Image: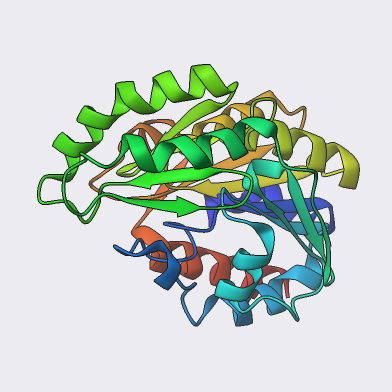
Length: 255
């Protein structure tokens, strides 16, 4: 528990910031089938009242993260979806107008993927579009073949490419998990921060945690697919189950 000492000193000033897929929910071939581990909602219900706040910062639409996590009745929880473009708090969802580039990419991307390897599929997130290769026979090869195509479309439509675990996501510029974390930590007046993630998109949140003028603990939900976060983390745990176990230890300590 030594690594959690900054949060344990003044738990009611602590902010816990969590990714969803790969951190609270195991990665699965079909993203529509992803669900948080059953232990997630109970441990967050136990932990949240003792902290300044809990925030989930995810590339998913905020409402889907709440649904797939079974989190609707967790109080003192905010979900920042679409890398911070959307906000869910206590059942209320705030979402901006759609970026015009997303609508254009939605029309063009299926045509560009017609010759993609079998198993490649498109996920429409509303404010973003994700190209997944996990179900292809050679996922890494398919990802590399599509990287330049997706990047060219992003440039034409004014979007940015967010790489991830066997996925390339087209999303609006101007927001990432780091900016979302920085703004939320300032909003709630966090006195310490724990941030947990598993993917390349979480590196921005790690950077933001390091830049905050408060003690920060960086947690990597470890996997064989992404190692960059483990190199930056204060603690590496064994995937979502390790994250839940760590949150359980924190809940035991502060309650």
